[in-house]
Image (cartoon, rainbow, N blue to C red; front, side):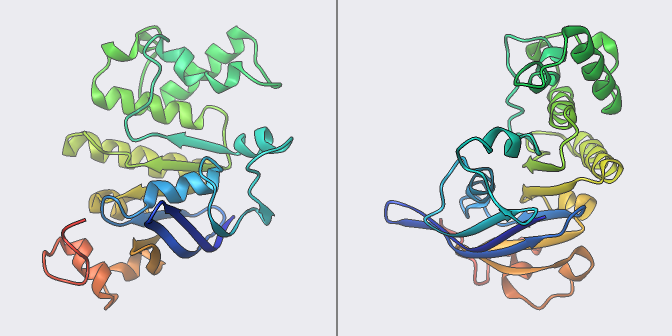
Amino acid sequence: MIELSGVKKSFGAKTVLNGVELSVPRGESMVIIGGSGTGKSVLLKCILGLVAPDAGRITVDGAPAATSGPGREAFLDRFGMLFQGGALFDSLPVWQNVAFRLQRGPRKLPKDEARARALDKLRRVGLDRSAADLYPAELSGGMQKRVGLARAIAAEPEIIFFDEPTTGLDPIMAGVINDLIREIVTEMGATAMTITHDMTSVRAIADRVAMLEGGVIRWTGPIAEMDRTPDPYVQQFIHGRAEGPIATVR
């Protein structure tokens, strides 16, 4: 579904991506692991066209990623996104946050239909209608993540990106969110890409794993092979070792 070939991106003198090669199979959950500042978020932004790569090729479903022009809106309609910090609109009630995309663009739904769709997605993530008219500030961190997940799936996208989905959550709530992500991605048959350094999340939601370090994909393979790979970068990262090829000062 998503192919990256020779993707490079620098910001001034700092090279972030230095020839990324990655294939994300249709309908599978790919998790990108790597330390803070290794370019995981930049990689997602390049796919979405929010950041223009300096070199390389990115295709989605066999076609070049639409970074501008008349096909841009249709291209973005294929994606859903759960942001690291939730990124909910403080001034909108929960249901309008979930229905934000549904109430805009050429396929804008009537208000009643958009609200009904939002309530359905809120139920899917474990929130009842009593939460629909609350504002984000009235929600706990775990509830805000659920709302963000409901918004990500509201338009039933083909591809869903998850940016550090369990950041700021306690271990129990993180487990709940991981389970929801796994269930929903499987139900929808969506292609998923997640970026995280939380190994519990990796083991809960990944079909395949890719290790980004030094601007390149150092290793990629099925989750079942992650613990067995002799790759020193992967072994240092997944076991949290101070000693190894990954620099501890970034």
